[in-house]
Amino acid sequence: MNTVADIFAGDVLQKLFPPERADEFFEALFGDASEGAYDIALRFGEHDAGANRLVFYLDLLERPGCCLVCNLTYGLPEVFSRHPIININGLVADIEKKLDGRATCADWSLGTTTQQQKNLHSIPLYITLS
Image (tube, rainbow, N blue to C red; front, side):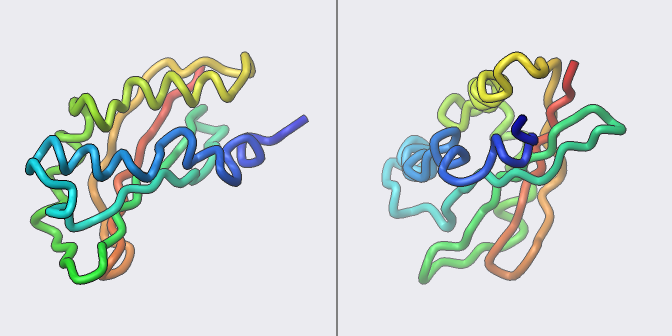
């Protein structure tokens, strides 16, 4: 039987949250995808069995020649939570499909943006299982 980490390994995360979604987001936001300062990648964090939840991260990766500054990323959890292109509801539904009946995604929330490195900020996605 696959562990949760096995399920969300390899190219599965890129299929769940394709790299071109960042360009689509910036195209909608600014009218030009090249105006975006970062790419967005989905990363699996952990299965917290005690809290009965999955933790993923939306990693914001600074684009070459751009500056990823905190004041641009700290308000993003609220924006991402309701933006139709980022589509967290759809993402969580797709994650649930990958669980293939092992669990149901009962609820989700986005945490606070954290700076991992100068060129990498992360937004946690917490998914409560039932």
